[in-house]
Image (cartoon, rainbow, N blue to C red; front, side, top):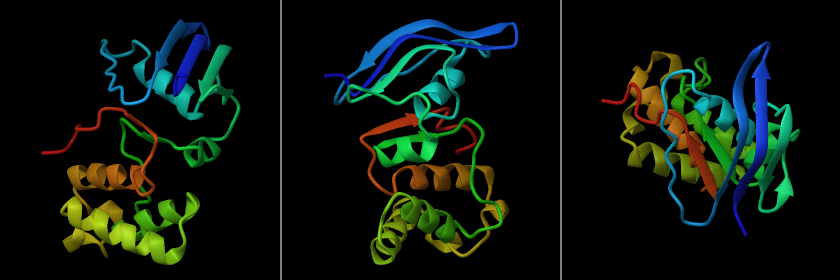
Length: 168
């Protein structure tokens, strides 16, 4: 069975058709890259899979269950995490608190979230800036922090939109 399947998925914004009848399947262990010019619908497609947008037509399935219409949080708790093209971190929270908040939202206990956050900060070289507000981190550090949030609970599926943008 496919982990993620899209069946004739469509999405329009006003008169602009961003996604037109897309069908594909993603199975266990697969690594897939979407390539196309700016404005070709790549980010919209990821938003449809992650619940940040709802399709106008078609079906989005995770492990055989329809997920269109579910909240992004519910989809994340099912094991599908999303990293954005434009970095999304809590700018007025420390790097550590960004990770802890994500871990708690995904169901980790406080001690488990703290241990995982510490490990991620060290692995990504962010331990020295753990107590700084995320808004004071460089663009690359914010991208790494978002990546760390995406992996606070190891996802079954990770959707990474421009994961290396701003990382030097």
